[in-house]
Length: 255
Image (tube, rainbow, N blue to C red; front, side, top):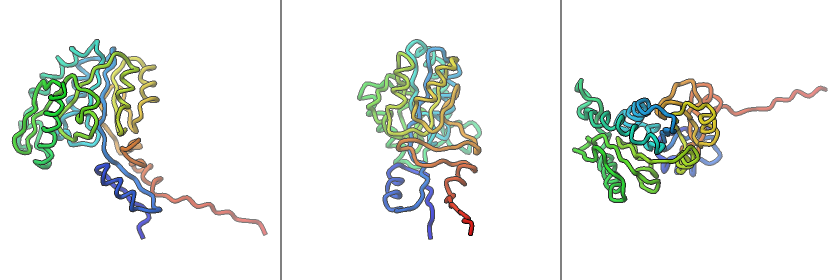
């Protein structure tokens, strides 16, 4: 008899499993569109490096990839000046070649979907700073500026090598945009203000919070999992055991 179901995959499939699971425990690790936030006191070069690492590793095909880069107006131009050359210089190609830095997407239909979302965002007002094209399964590393929250590249799970940049005025607006999603798996923030970092940690609805790095980071010992439609339960040895444990109460009564 199946006592528990654990699943990693799309939100749609996860919801179907939960509907038919009945009275069983479930652990669901589902979709996301993780934000990386740069507050006004952030170091632009550090933000750029984290955005590059978090946004384009494995061609963006990681559930905790950075998909939305939320940047304070006051440092926007500096962050873009640091990030754009890094994205433009990424070598895309056969992952078996030594010089390749970013390989293909898993399926051509996924690459086509990413390109269509990028094209749609451009029609809706976003600016493609670099990339935007594909050749079969090879999708270029793409950087979009002036994105808006209603665009698919910000609203849905892209799961591809494109980063959408949104501008904000302050931490209030940054937290609002970070939470303006149905997902909540991982989020990162760059700031030198510990009070701002702690406020971000409290108020952002995300299962994993990273201070001064991007969302694409995990270690097996941490309680890994999402909030909202990003999933149910936590992974990691200690936490997985707890998820798989059914507690009993045993009472010995005196005679």
